[in-house]
Amino acid sequence: MSNTNYKSTDALMRHLRNNGIAISGSSQKQQLINTGYYHGYKGYRFFASSHRRLPFTSYNEINATIQYDTKLKSLLYGKMMFIETALKNIALNTIMAEIGSNSIYDMYDKVVSSYKNAPEGTSEDIKKKYQNSKLNLQGSIQNSIAAAYRKDNPKITHFYNNVNYNEVPLWAIFEILTMGDFGYLLSCLTKDI
Image 1 (cartoon, rainbow, N blue to C red):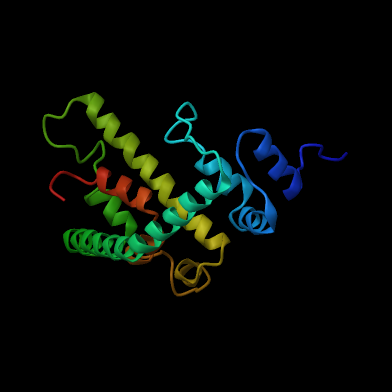
Image 2: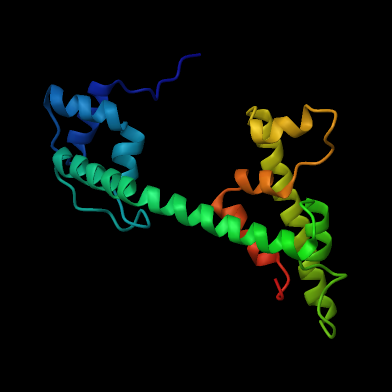
């Protein structure tokens, strides 16, 4: 069975013209190929929600926005990587100093808020909320480890493919966490930490 929704680059250019975007010529065709119709055009046609369409009328405007976005990302990327690395290492050092080990299980037991280590006087509902967050964190970290293992990430495979190790140390786990997962981990830590 053939997919009738497929459009060639020429057909996509016609589609754009039919929808009020001036696009023509081999130069703009190559720009569309390089940025991609779905990433380049669809990704830049509105702000925040589809109800707030941007008033583009030519592909030059779209391409200029893509170029601006790319340059802005490249300008900030190095600084963001520095901040991410610094934050992860500060948190990692603080956690390991508190628990006295590099074991994820010690982290879960000693510095992640849970039912058993909630502050005295914490309501039953809040204790359950802490425990649920801890379980979600454990699942998220296990998913990150499994994904890294599937992708043959040496930071993880080294520990699973070596008979002398039985656990991935915290520092290796922090290396593979996305900023979102890292932020969630921070939100699950006890108030003291």
